[in-house]
Length: 326
Image 1 (spheres, rainbow, N blue to C red):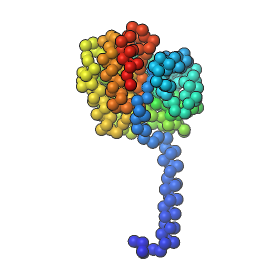
Image 2 (image 1 turned 45 degrees about the vertical axis):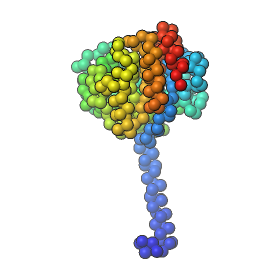
Image 3 (image 1 turned 180 degrees about the horizontal axis):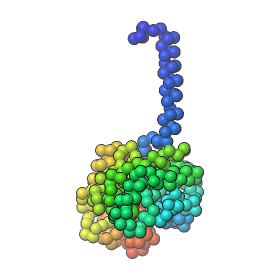
């Protein structure tokens, strides 16, 4: 006997009603524009940044051959941040990457997206604070909807968006420091605007630079509902700092993986490479071992001088360390 005392036919009817009700709810969830949770780390998928434009796409095959470990499944490019037209995604820049992405089902595009125009023009803090205030009230939402629509139209709906990268520093106009509260609100608005576009499946990567920099990157974190991947740009700097110190410094590599674990996020490394310590094979061995241990969604070697290992011929010992790492 069923607990309700009803017979089998009545029980089956009740089940039918329940199934119908649940089925009706499914379209509501999918229509919200909110993608499912980010997948688990894909197993240390590698990328090499070879240039933002079509020429960069063309160099990927040569980089694959030099690396000698099969296809690079991750392509990585950057939108310029000079004007809002740049940030809306110039079709001429995106189209070659869309063609590259479309050639294989297991490929993914990583796209760095500035959050403000005049992004590398030394805009003073007071002006940045004013812009963040406007942004937090929705002044720039439409630009990001346009970008999302263009990405979906180009069949790049599953792009990983590295939004407002290195926000804890001083380099970019889209920095967080002048008003972290407004910045966090702005990030949430951008993500909401892009997720509102039909067909999107974007993943949003929060990627500070390693260490404290101008402000602690934790002060900029906008919340778990608006972040899918916890990234970090991790160059070999400052001068004299060993890889072990880069791991253990405040807001360093250890802090990143611990924070990601607490927030149930996979990690990534959108930019890594040599810098202040020259041709440093110990750093390369440290980073590649770190990737094997923590299995980032992806990691991108920046390959122009002074950071690079393939086209930058001034780092032969580090290049050998990279090619020998497995």
